[in-house]
Image (cartoon, rainbow, N blue to C red):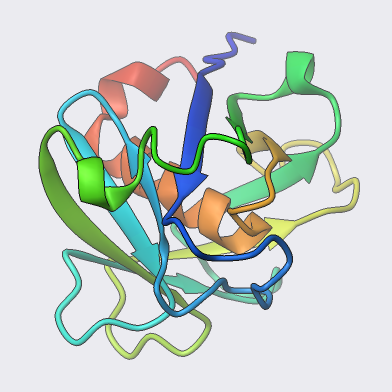
Length: 159
């Protein structure tokens, strides 16, 4: 099995204290810069570029992910530096900013995903994510990963 492990470092917008987020994150959002795009991950947006609905595990979804605690087994690794909030904030985005709205109630989502944190039956989750962050919630990290898979499928083709 081929693992596409991507180590990524991200930070949130300045001014959000650690732990100030609920399950789906702070309303102002957090930012993540990829090669050509910066994603602002929010809980609500009037017209997001991408809308991701987090669904219960028993629903039909576009992508299933499992949060794991071993980076070496993950397909996607997201680690932020809580001391460097300015490095990849939206204010200093080096490229176009795309808005990604994450919600369990998105009316017409671009993607629907399920996120589990417990061991699932073999192949129940197609991808595994390792998250060590004070800025991103598991739902935000999974939604960001789903959009990256959708927009750059070749990077994850072997899975």
